[in-house]
Length: 100
Image (cartoon, rainbow, N blue to C red; front, side, top):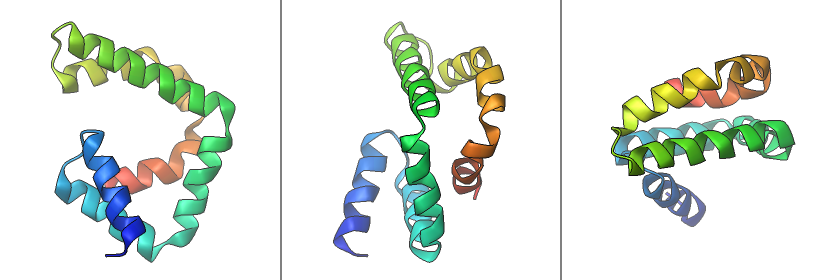
């Protein structure tokens, strides 16, 4: 594992991802560099970036209020379901990455 992969894995773990899941994602990104480029395009999309910021913020607020993380994520994702569906084509590479 190169330095870039190591740092990426540590960042994913700091964001709450398990070591195994972070390892799988790193492996997929190393095997499919085009997937990494697709993910970079997501960051350039202002609407998608704002959507993720809002989702992250609301999940954190619910967790601080005592809601379990998975339940908080479900509640917030349901709230933003229409926007997620609207951007499903742009989000497809991310969803593929997380499902494997």
